Image (tube, rainbow, N blue to C red):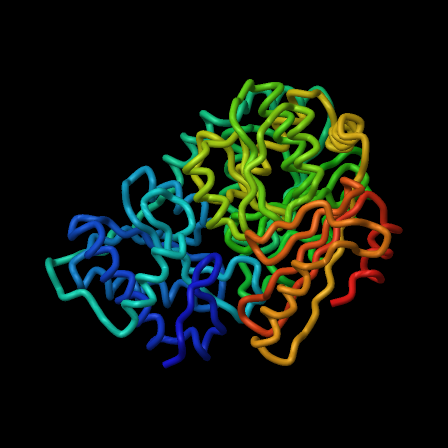
Length: 463
């Protein structure tokens, strides 16, 4: 038995090593005990899984353990994206377990525990689950497993959030073509079904089959793994490319020039869209690692910014508290007001098409509009600093806290909600130093309004 730890988005480990039958049984029993003691015997438990190796096997093992204890388990009859399972947790007032390792390498698998509020479990919840490791809930009833198709209520909900007719009209009149890169992910059947049956637009697609090795790449919608999509767009007349990660909660977008559009830009564009075109009121929730671009567009649109530590469990918690217009993180996750406090890559893809339709603009055009409003661009970089041991982490962070200057720039403000973030006095640069959490490593993030400044800061920042 190895130590089971729940990080920012569940427990993850390598299949056949730490992610094995014994440890999955321990996790299942610990979760069952938590659900029974917190919610009682009548709480339903939903279980879903993505295309990863053994995800179906371990998820069904867990379903049997929980049903044997007395729970009514609604088990997905097929591969399912995380946001669809999460939405059903809210709709059915149930808890959910999703078997996925998100965008991690193919050899990994994991378990996300999703409480009935339909967002990532917060640390107080996962701490209780971890405390239950080695224990189990005594059999309290005759449980059962019900194979379930979770699609319809999610699709019905999206129909209330997205103006499909507007998108359909834009695609028809503009000649814009949508290319969906399935990336071998959980969203393959689902996003294509949304485009065909709900938005009702033609589209092209790539990599529309499930593969436990994700085509030899990574289930991550980043340019490196979307090279074929980028090539296809560059060879087409007027196309936009979309993809999701392994379990469908993150998004990746390629514009009509074949360029990757960062999540910071997408969230900024969608904030403009929701505020201006759909008259949604509220704040913006972003993480401490997200771009100043978000702060700048929020200021231009007179929207308050709420900043959280990195990780969507913190973003989701803020969503439940503040009911923002939009909430997102720099790694490609977002959600909006009226939806669940969980990142949703399928929703993000549809929102991008909706924004283009409302503005009657290509995505390239929306990027130009964004930067015309903000007045400057922002660039990012990251370096990793390996330390000898965990004992060195705290002294380094304490040293960073005391810095008053970095090169030619003064430190205007210091933030310590997640590591140490230094805001510099040019009002367009910051440095964030965060511990890895799993190894003696510091991640050092840089942002500034020019690549030259980034290089200057990297040279000047000595710790």
